Amino acid sequence: MNEQVVLVTGGAGYIGSHACVELLQSGYRVIVVDNLSNSKIESLSRVKQITGKTLQFYQADIRDKKALAEIFAKEPIATVMHFAGLKAVGESCEQPLNYYHNNVYGTLVLTEVMAEANVKQLVFSSSATVYGEPSCVQYVEDFPLGAVNPYGRSKAMIEDILRDLSVADKHIQTKSPWKIALLRYFNPIGAHESGMIGEDPNGIPNNLMPYVSQVAIGKLEQLAVFGDDYPTRDGTGIRDYIHVVDLVKGHIKAIDALESEKFSLGGCKAYNLGAGRGCSVLEIISAFERVTGRKVNYRVAPRRAGDLAEFFANPELALKELNWKVEKNLDDMVADTWNWQSKNPQGYV
Ligand code: NAD
Ligand code: UD1
Image (cartoon, rainbow, N blue to C red):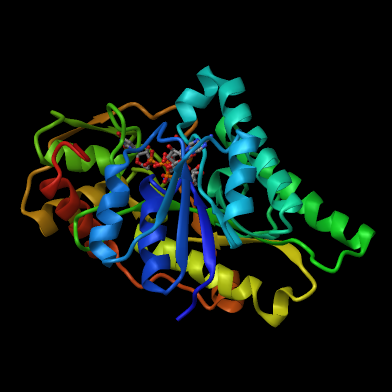
């Protein structure tokens, strides 16, 4: 067990709340900073119920430097897990300034405060979106980056800023270098096995799994399958879905790695967090129907602009250097999504 204090930005959100559970269960002390712009405080009450442990919550915006500095002055923070950010691709195309301000400027303020407090261990939520459209479907970390929308570009810019911070350490020969893991998530789905926390999207979901589960529960009438004429095994899009609990376990492994010999001289390194295999939209629908016994009403619709036919992770680097790989399969992802959805048909009320 481990009494280290971890600051979780965006800890009330979908992935952050699961990370809080995993951290508390691994013995860490947890401090959450969240402005609740896309989450509800109820998620953190549920985290406490699941773990039987407490955590410290500050309702604050990461762009509020004074508020952040006060937290760092008060709390003995060792590591930051940085989830806070806006994440809807379509919205980012309509409101690019809002996305760059929140995600990029927010990270600048956070890292400035961290540097001033000499807290230099950071695990950052990046995304497979930074890759853009490489010629091969299985992504490796050193592929050239090429995000194609403001959300993706905000993640790529943050990666650049964090890499620059780490490179600067070499120039100034600091004794406390930055240790940074850039975790590139593929498609996180699922929920904690208790069904007490899960994804609670605002309005009509953009992503496949929450849409499917809201059709199955009767909240939405019909799923549109975006294209069945892709060059894939059944014509529908293929993605690398990863259980959110596997994903957050990868974050704990990342802290272990940052504290190991490997990062003793500091560094900033990207890791893919994915399963290394893809599922098609029709495979998701059929797994959902089989596991839950519910019919998923769907129709085939035209392709969605900006979608790729197929991509999935090469997760070998995370296995080699973080000693991490996924443990859960598609049936677990579907069963846990349904457990959350059926126990919380209106999300966090
Ligand atoms: P989420 O919206 O559920 O959680 C993000 C949290 O950050 C929310 O609680 C929100 O209130 C908070 N937040 C946003 N801006 C803030 C700010 N300026 N100050 C303080 N709090 C702020 O999203 P999520 O799905 O849990 O994603 C977490 C992170 O992972 C995000 O950075 C996202 O871009 C990244 N990511 C998510 C996915 C995915 O499919 N969910 C995929 C790749 C990367
Ligand atoms: C989307 C984002 C990506 C983000 C990821 C996780 C886009 C273009 N990409 O990825 O930046 O990191 O979510 O948040 O928005 N599908 C349907 N019907 C639906 C919804 C989706 O058929 O109603 C299909 C899509 O065409 C795709 C698959 O399901 O083939 C997965 O879609 P989605 O869950 O939105 O994830 P991505 O498009 O991979």
